[in-house]
Image (tube, rainbow, N blue to C red; front, side, top):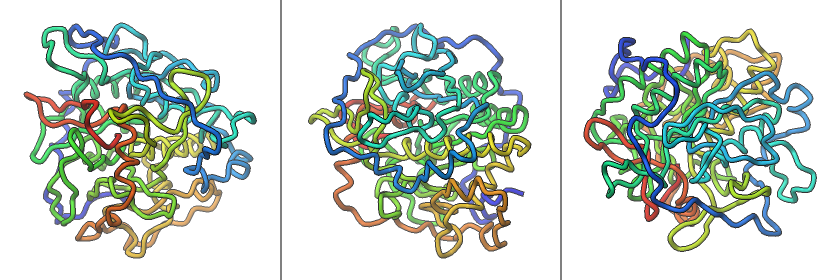
Length: 420
């Protein structure tokens, strides 16, 4: 039995899984004609003195003695993956935004996410950056973009919603992805119709045996989740995170291990990973970056969308080392080996910050029974500090929007803050 099930007192639940709503298998393509409306992101490469501090707790030497993720296919459902010398093994998964094949990235976000998962080590990189599972194969699927819009609506910026996300999940599962990373979040203050997405997640996990890792969502400005959840009854819904029986939801922590100010609380949060001041691959060059453009210039990359691929990389390592474990068993292992908070679980970090080496151990203990019960009141994140600017720094990254018609957009405008 999974230890990340919500308690019976939690009233905000996703709609029941309706398998009749599972998207039909079909070649990826935009559901309606689109056009590019903004120039592609051109970030500055990381300067001298930059450091991949988010990897401080990752003992690559010890972990890679056990596995580097060989044999795993990790689908990155995002803004695409640009060609990069440190991503030698990227499979075309398809494009729901334009006429590409998933290996184009105008926004830059998907390439950053892909690099966190599987960038090859490079001894000439003075930042110390590397991917978590460098021998994993990536499947690039472009599902959303902030640079494109529908031809039929010239005033509409951004493309991609929970419907195209559902299609992308089906495609990734059918392509044999053992891990699926979703760093896009749809937030709403009332119920939303994402039933096709729920059906796709159920299909991926229980039919195709994929582990689906998703970002918890960010709070911080327009286009982001509208408010922080601070009580046992959440005021903000996050999808796909709230499908907790089917996804491993990841919150963000800072260098000190404390919950990030921007990381959305919720009874669906399962684990946490570093998500502040990230270094990853340049989507427009052959080096690394530690910032993305904002309306005010360049600023550091932070968000739960960067914490999620750290966990996805660890999941790929676990699946490579223990190939007989089912998707659900892998999810439980990641939660059971995390550094649990004092109550065993809380709504900011879930079961705690992940421990890659413990997850790869031959001897993993079953967590105490109390860790299966979610705390009644979500704990607040740390007080506001200088991280708000750091969150705003990844303004080019894919993020969340509200309900539009019958679907929820996975996009935001350039003036919005907080990346996800």
